Amino acid sequence: MRRVVTILSFILCLLSNVVELQAQNHVTWNASWDKQSGMVIIRGNIEPTWHLYSPQTDPNLGPIALSVTFEKNKGIKKIGSLEFLTAPVAHQDDNFGGMVYIWENVVEIRQAFRIKKSGALKLTVNYMICDETKCIPPIDVPITIQINN
Image (cartoon, rainbow, N blue to C red; front, side):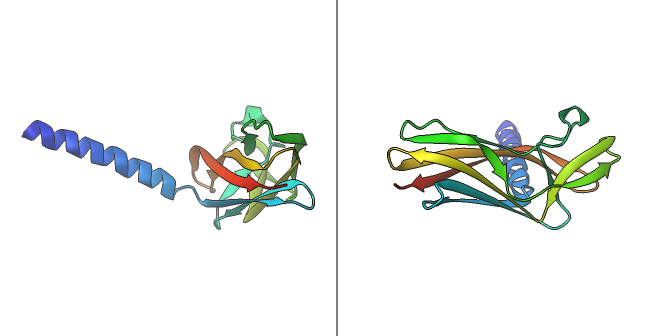
């Protein structure tokens, strides 16, 4: 009986850590399809006091920059590369020992596509979020949106 209680306690601890990590996301993501421009628009609303890192940040400094990957789809072809509509702010970060480029409050991104056939587009946003005292390990957020011709 004691062993069962120990195992159940361990499982509950693991589950509470997963819930805690999800609660520490600090960014709300949404994506939409703009048929007129042929672009997917991705928007992240960042909680106050938190920030994300731009790909402009030197990867040798340590922070993990925001990236978006798109799952291949025969009917939906990516054109060009991501366009960051929100300009990052330069910030001297003594924790990382250099100049980093960050987004606070909001980040908006777009990606052009050529549509041969309507369907679901799956993408993953990967990023590390920090405040002035701590960083949360990189997070993957999967998003699926419907693309219509």
